[in-house]
Amino acid sequence: MTTAGKAYCWGSNNQGRLGDGTTTDRTIPTLVSGEYTWASVDGGVSHTCGVTTAGEAYCWGNNANGKLGDGTTTNRSVPVKVGGDW
Image (cartoon, rainbow, N blue to C red; front, side):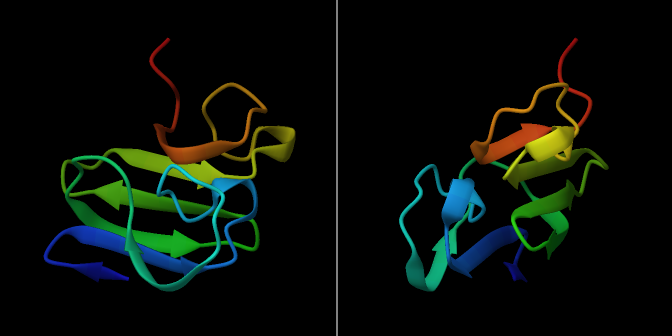
């Protein structure tokens, strides 16, 4: 869910898929970490991705097989830029 450019997630937080910097399950909407202004956010089964109003893509959560696109297979509990900084 996005509200005024802020993203909120809730539910199961396995592998950090809510993006709040923890793996704690949340029963209410919880702000996604970072100072991003989101244009859209979409959740998958075990990860979440979003696009900022600047057109940059970020993902977080389960990173099996490199699905977050950051060049690693490390799970992330906060948004990481797709394509990394390499």
